[in-house]
Length: 125
Image (cartoon, rainbow, N blue to C red; front, side, top):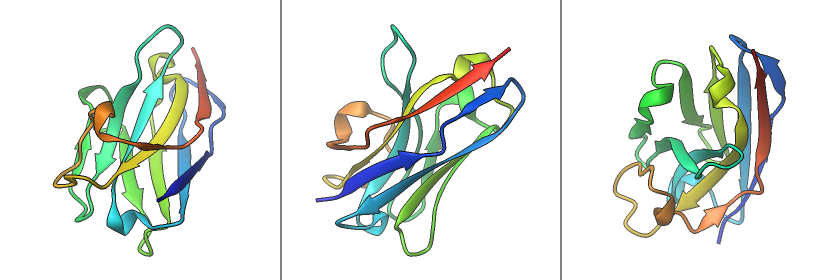
């Protein structure tokens, strides 16, 4: 079973950049599909980006061209590079992983049984 710990959340101005990291222990991302989700106050948790075991990537339409998901070669750390941040990108960001039927990079929350504790991103206008 994999354990996930996020870091890198911060407060930035609109147009700025942040890089989130999520370190895995107990297993590596090479055995899992992994993704980033976010949740703003009063809103549902939504998938932002996901990466499959073979490197296949999916992005939510709202972040395409601005966010980049990646993982390091050993498969221990998952990243989310966020550029051109907008106030609507603010929220708690979570990394997550799943193994069952990991054929591609799903953005469906229900696919993911393993979650980190979250890291806060604030974007001011």
